[in-house]
Image (cartoon, rainbow, N blue to C red; front, top):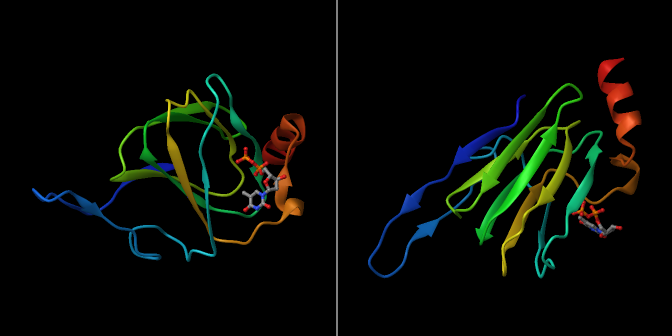
Amino acid sequence: MEPRIIHLPKFLDDRGNLSFIEENNHIPFSIERTYWIYDVPGGERRGGHAYGNLQEFIVALSGSFDVVLHDGDKEIRFHLNRSYYGLYIPKMMWRELENFSTNSLAMILADQNYDENDYIRNFEKFTRIKNG
Ligand code: TYD
């Protein structure tokens, strides 16, 4: 599957808006883990790795940031700045999160528990695996 922006249901309401995510409905996997990234100092970056098997869905619950993906061939940049859509990232994509705005909050849904052995932290190794 390709990385793509997925728009979520949005209930606009004078009392405040509401959005939600159902596993295997709005996102194409079952959720095994949720983590979030917050209090990112200005100019810092997160990520800088790929996962061998993990799929993720990233939402900017607050503020904004960029997700820069590399598929072993080309780079694709996504700007996330609303809580009613997110970025689906299939396995084997190199990713960096950068340009975090003040007080931004990145929520990440993942289809597997944390496993350091699934991380590919070397970009050369990543492109070698991708390109054979
Ligand atoms: P890492 O995935 O490298 O951060 P980034 O989001 O920038 O890619 O995770 C940083 C550290 O946090 C890692 O050394 C281990 C810990 N960690 C967990 O224990 N569980 C988790 O679910 C995650 C995402 C990280």
